[in-house]
Image 1 (cartoon, helix red, strand yellow):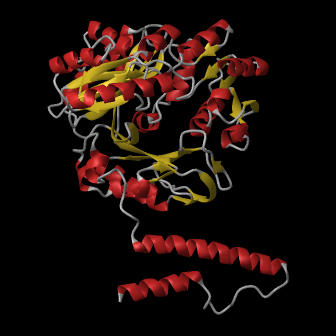
Image 2 (cartoon, rainbow, N blue to C red):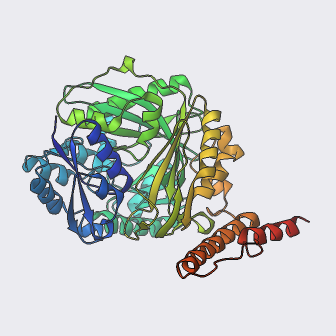
Image 3 (cartoon, rainbow, N blue to C red):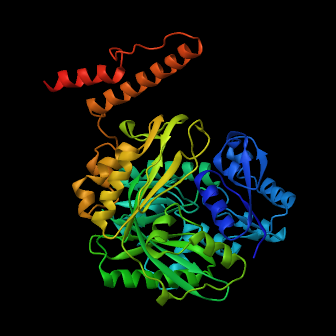
Length: 506
């Protein structure tokens, strides 16, 4: 087993890997940019190495600096987390060339899966069902029109090197096609340095369902069942749950078998996720393979009891998987709510800033994976994810009720987060029925933004702000030897707000 691992990431996932290392008796080493000097993952590690300015292109994405940091601390392996360099084949090769173990799949597997077109070709050859479309990039608008005529509108234009919802355009007609192709290519070139775009038939009102797989270097493969990731905004996941509430048992069995076949087709090693689109008749089609640990991995851990980070590290150390498929069972249901620093009342626009107050929920079967704390500032340079709330229940209804309760306890102020959105979803009839699709947010929340908060909620925020200011004034007055605030309560902001609310009700 390794003695020291460099965690080449930041935020909640870096802290998650640090904890996994500690449980295995491995010394974790953090890296950080200028913006992350005071971050929790830096404090939690045994060592922390500075690797550059706040911009990720000059820090977390600098392969040379990450490799130099690993050499400087004597790390035998690097865990990339998710995002940044986690699916970068060049980084995996650089680790190998430096004599450092990359905790992830082989570079050739990453390269094959990093191109959506190459992955489609491999999967089709392996008998994995793919969405009808092209296996080569479309060359120009005329080429795209010919393909669209064969496939039939609506279609999706998708970046071959894409990810994170970038380089994707939904097209309903020939009239939209040329401009959409130009925009998709431009966005893809800007985001990935590659403007190759291909066409897929648009599966209307699909579910986004993924299967967690594990493989080792000894040829052993297992799946850990599926996760439903259909609640999305801007093609990015917001809420995930397991199991998928509408999947028929025979479809689940076929899907998990196909996922193992997909992993074997590329010689996958480690933890990965095979993603599918599922149509209204529960036909499923290969979407992509995420060659890394997923943001939503904790819900799989909750229902299976298997620590995926531990499994990643042990497999990377050359150990065989300690279990076979028959040993793995899924018990109950789990839900993950991603807590972003975004304003749900303004179309989920990012809302970075300082966190002055934070109270995380607790209780049985409630888990919070986060990297924030009171006094920490959500930076403007990175993804706005603050934390993940993960909840388990014996049944889906129990998991939803427990999630709603936990969300009611979760406080992060004064920045806006999407906690109010999650609260509404847990009480939404369509979500509770389990029959939602990937257009859930658009269909249930109109333009993707929630209505303004109820007056009572707005008044509560005002009261909290006034109370905090009064508390600060009292402290200053006490230190100055003054009498402080009035003792009779007439100046209490909470009493004032209470009177306002009582007047409104009457």
